[in-house]
Image (tube, rainbow, N blue to C red; front, top):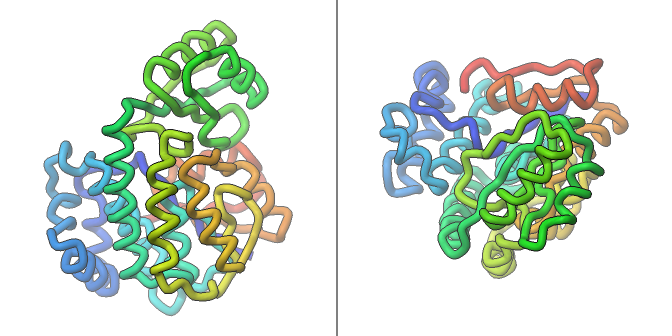
Length: 294
């Protein structure tokens, strides 16, 4: 079985997607459709910058959605996943890839949700930090010592757990984590605390928005971030897409369950050092194919 995986925020760079645009007619067609749907030429920002514009959450998320989706669709009819999953915002990309959402609906949902996330980011200063070199239990123990709002956000792979919360609480947690032997602490290039209670306004928005969107039965199972378990049930898919905003992302559980369910090859539709690296830390025996044009 072959699984296609879609990345989250963090790999944006000026020039992203240009090789796809130049080399694949289908990619070029969908990029231009995105320009029309969004009402501005996102391709100009992706290909030529400026970088500070590309780093805006609403631009970044749309760009990553487009590049990672078109990376898998570039060969047209040859795209036939046995199952899919997406890391954070990549879950929406995966829903388009498996046919649960149309390209148009997926892009517009991504754009509108990103705007809601920007509002939540501005409302309460927050950040996310990747903790390297400690176990899940050690990180959770350290966070329990902090009075402010800081929670586990991404259970990515052995030795890597992302925390999220209010700035002062995250900083206090980082001091404690260093004292307990954290090998490295890396602040992520996001504007706030995704997968934490601070994203409740986005949950409120999605609870009103998703019933208006025509979802379709996916043509293959998807593994939502919230459960890490395969499903094709539309109500479960929508519930998980909503809760993803405030619940931790169970990526390690997702990959383990995919392998247990029979996946023998993963196709990483993002940059090769991100999702592929996490898979190899979870299980170094499975095959991983990385993207050519990102």
